[in-house]
Image (cartoon, rainbow, N blue to C red; front, side, top):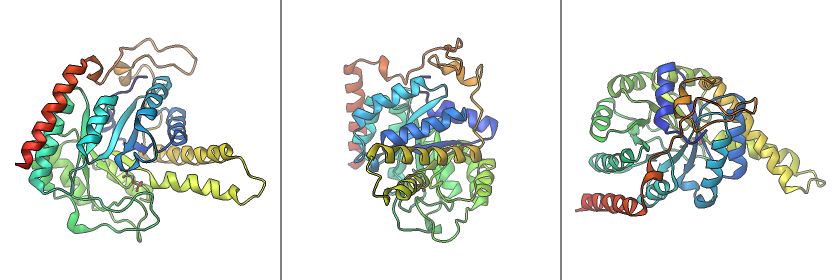
Length: 339
Ligand code: 13P
């Protein structure tokens, strides 16, 4: 299936009461592990590339591979920029055909977060790209060995969330309600009341960052209260390292690609576990709702699905001049905020 927008995936998740996993791609092996897991469980999936992970993969190399892999996968796949903080990252992702992006202005003063997010939403929507933003601060450090605890003073304020969503027009909102990126100090304590109030007031799909290490029951309750997208990275990374660690001490193990295969299997199994908890397994069965935006997926029988209409993120239809004009408009808008 061709890449679909995050909005398509999340609308369906909200309607049916499950959440979709957003898993970080940091290498070819992680891409393969995630897609194998989602394909096996026939679940939609969001492939996230985080700006802080650009140092691990060359975006211009990996995106064509991701598109090719998504086209062959018989499931809906969104390609998402995770925690985009710089305008450069956002524009690169537009250019490369990402179908959604997170603009993370959570550490900016409130009015600046609103203004920058609204500007990016305006441009993104003109080319069919979905936008997630963050209000409050989730904090922590994904993939690091340092554990963190959530800072209540940085939790999302429900009333401010309503104002933020109304003024920015974001498609999804990342909320700070007790999760952190990376390892937890002690047991995570999600603030379910706050989550419920934010969901009721905003009416948009909510996003839980820091999905590693949260007990399954808490995840399920959060989904029942409005969480529709859950970000996971640290547990995948830990499993990959664990699988390698188990073998690498053996002096006979000198095969680098075999270690990579072990890492990929660890990632795949972690993603499968998460998909099962999130409730998104088996939701992609043809003919189904996603067939409307499908670019002809290959069915398990090897046949091409008949119910297909190619989807694009809109950017492909634009000329280079039109894209250049849009870039200039965004840059002008953002520079004007500094005056
Ligand atoms: P974890 O690394 O804690 O799973 O969080 C991932 C995340 O939120 C990416 O945005």
